[in-house]
Image 1 (cartoon, one colour):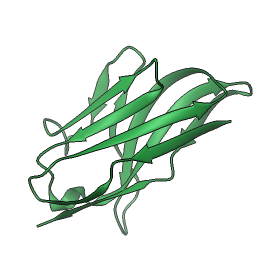
Image 2 (cartoon, helix red, strand yellow; image 1 turned 135 degrees about the vertical axis):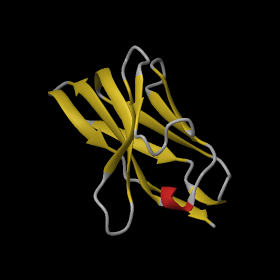
Image 3 (cartoon, helix red, strand yellow; image 1 turned 180 degrees about the vertical axis):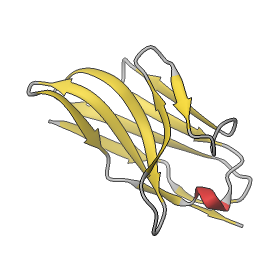
Length: 119
């Protein structure tokens, strides 16, 4: 079983910054893609950013040039540096990992962390 623990959410004013972190633990044999998704009230969950094992990253158009995703393969962690935050970035942010464990490949989700940007 793979467990994800997120941290770093909170309340920030527009234009401010936050850094989210997610640590994967458990019976992990390998991790492929790591990413962040978000879900605002009344909206569907959407991709924010993903990063492959080699470091290649993709971002939603709405966060390009403001957010940066990074990972530490040795520590099984993924981070999301969020700068120039806007009120429309307010959402619950979820960490997602595609990992292989004793029972094979699977997609795993964190519990979510609230990010609130005030205007």
